[in-house]
Image 1 (tube, one colour):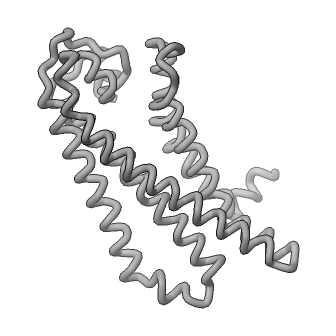
Image 2: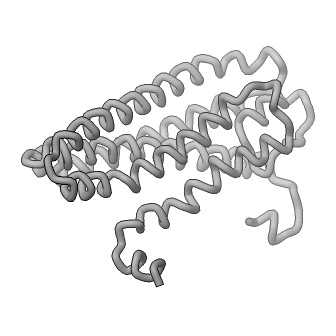
Length: 222
């Protein structure tokens, strides 16, 4: 936004580091909170009578604090490790914001091997969260199939639909951005994919989470 207002594409070194920190921090926190919300949906449908015990206000506060603390730690580690590398390939990024893969392309070819351990730890943590979400929804769908009335199944599914939509959009775009084959990679495609996972999910989240709002449904039906 600052670059747009000043009609420039330049960013300072410190500004780039700060941008990387907040980007990783907010993306990590969103993913951890989505994982926590999958547990909330599981308890609400599969363990409803124990909901207040398993997810009381104190437990929710601890889960939210853990998500924010984990996101901050993840962002600090990635930012510190990324910007400790010397830049040997110039200072121009083929991206509209400071993205870690693009910064690594500017570093010396052998220097960023130190980041491998951080990628392994981060990938393991994110994979664990992904498995947790999948297992939670497997249990949820099994419980939905056991609900005798169609109205009850519809109501329970409507509880999960917004969260499931956000998770699917967030993970599909992020996975494609980071796991796409290098053979199809290009500067223009990288920009488009980055918009998909960094701009689109936050933009549509308020709309998706408002799908159960009766006033919004009434306004859309008119």
